Amino acid sequence: MGVLVDTTPLRVSPDFRRLWSGQAVSFVGSMITTAALPFQVFRQTHSSLAVGLLGLAQLGPLFICAVVGGGFADRLDKRHLLLAVTSAAVTCSAALAVNATLDHPQLWVLYVVGGAVGGVTAVSSTVLRSMLPLLVEDELRPAAYSLQAAYGSFGMMAGPAAAGLLIGGFGLTSAYLIDVASFGVALATFAAIAPSPPVSGATAEAAMSLLAGLRFLRGHRVVISVFAIDLVAMVFGMPRALFPALAERLGGGPVLYGLLLSSVAGGAFLAALASGWTARVQRQGRALLVAVGAWGVSVAGAGLAREPAAVLTLLGCAGAADMISGVYRSTIAANLTPDSLRGRVSGVEFAVYAGGPVLGDVEAGVVGGLAGITFAIVSGGIACVIGAALFAARVRGLATHQRPRPTDAATAP
Image 1 (tube, rainbow, N blue to C red):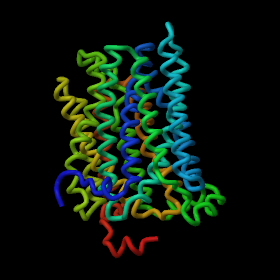
Image 2: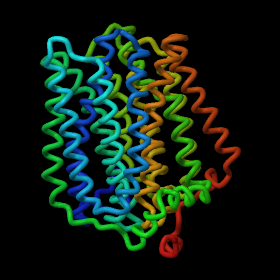
Image 3: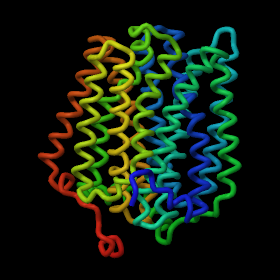
């Protein structure tokens, strides 16, 4: 087994290849919009707190749609649902583009449509997460999640950098229009995926509401801990709401702002390309804890640095650590979740994984506004290290969790 990312899932599963390629294209466009929205809010208000409130506007739709969308993903054909939410995403991006063309763009539109984008993204990601394990064999899941992390980290690297260049050179409207085009490509690609009807037994359980998924989680402390440790890392250690102000402090403009966002993803992308070793790790729980600790140390270091190159490098190291932790978070959760509950558990999973950074935007905006940028970033990184240590000490099932053997996977529920 090599060091570079394992591309076997792309070769053996045509539908995984279509899902992966369509999402890879649209995700770049989504990241352009994700970077453009807070920049536009900061440009119109000159307030980091206002940027943090954008995250608050997205939080409710994100949580509700992630959990509710998980129920729909278990009851409906996943491909049809994916096509529907992708069409809704096109509408949201088009609305942002129209607003940006106005002589006086409306701030309330950014918050309202931003909230809608959060909800649409939640449903889309929930469907994608519930589909992926059904398209590849158990032993290929670490490789599939590494490939997913590769396009995700590339999109988060290329998208914000492209947003900075587009905004600086052509204005905000161009950034949103690129997103519209990317979703068009995704729609055409997703349409070729085979139908993905509900798994046997999922419809009956869904009739009992989302409580079935929640009951499953309540009985699996390791899965709950996997979600919780990511929530801690993102709430306290993700300082992206401070990046517009940080770019100004470092003497830069839109281009440096885009690079700050891209640096985290750049480190994750490089780590994903060299992720072939991740499938060989036996103690997956310990690897997850170490990666979260490394994330916190790197973020704290970035808060202390004063040179743009040093800040970008340390944020890249943080992104690499987050990519590794993400592979093991997704792998552990997928291995322990029954097929009939994947939609609902994926909904909760996405609510945590995507809601954490949004809560982090609020936390960073408030703390940064009250105590300053440096304190907000450094204290958040330290909190992540402390959180990883507490999980290692208090949740022994997570710290000792190991990769299942082939016989274990075959007999899993």
